[in-house]
Length: 153
Image (cartoon, rainbow, N blue to C red; front, side, top):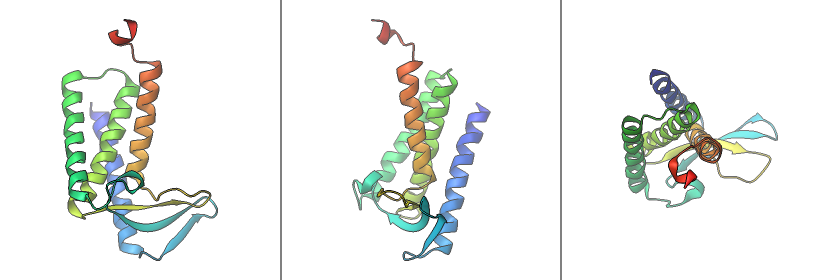
């Protein structure tokens, strides 16, 4: 259990540190070419969810994020998942949701800063990466490793 708490804390810590650094050092017009042609750092104040869904509903999204995090804790406590891939996916989903919830609660918006230079895609952050990777791993787990009784019926 401790290793998963450490992973979640590391993801949230790195996410929050990156957001603090971006907010302190970039303005809305700045663009740092980290790897030219691949990705840049820009400072975006996102009041919505993915792809700006529910823009200007930060309070609602913050509540949803907090309830999701509570749900994950309850799930972990009640179900005690055994498979490492399931544990990792749930840990990453939790950490990403918590990282963005912290922004919504304390800043009133989510700090996004990673911009892909090679394609048109919304600006995102480390918490978003954790959520995306966690969701992908959960899908892989459900498709290939989940041995629940529902599948055998």
